[in-house]
Image (tube, rainbow, N blue to C red):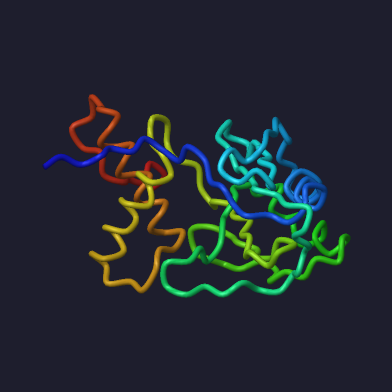
Amino acid sequence: MRKIQTQGVHHITLTGADRQTSIDFWEGVLGMPFIFEQPNLDVPDENHLYFDPGDGRLITIFTNERRRPEGRRQATPPGAVHHLAFAVSQVSFRQVAARLEERGIPNSGPKDRGFMDSIYFPDPLGLLIEIASYRFEPPQGHTHSDVLMEAHKIRLKRGDYAIDPEHLADAITALVERACPSLSEDRTPRNPYA
């Protein structure tokens, strides 16, 4: 028996409201370029809209002109989608709450997650959307996942409750030290000002 090895998210497809509400939200609120559309090839009464979330992959929306925005939170039983998270830079993150409030969109306000910041709000049909921003940049040749895995190991070794900025900084140091050899025999911290 062999596993199927994934190499990233190809696309995510959601059931949306009508065409214009979907365009107004995904492009008009979240800034995702509307890149193409075609009929839903499995359901002739629906349209299929495609948006670029910023990394060249796709968020696609099935629309139907009979569906209207409800705005209330959708149920999240086991197996259901709880929320979708989209990445922004820290400078953009600082603007999110104000830009949502300009439109009258209720939101959670900034949430401190230790390794990232988050703001939550509903899409027009009540699906919870998260705007997330990492508080760190991974070292060259590494991913955010590499840093988080290393920070997790450090956190567990120290017996700490959750990842915090110190774990991230130490994880980045450990990754760089492993990836970048040095001619120095001793790479321990020192104080040249003593």
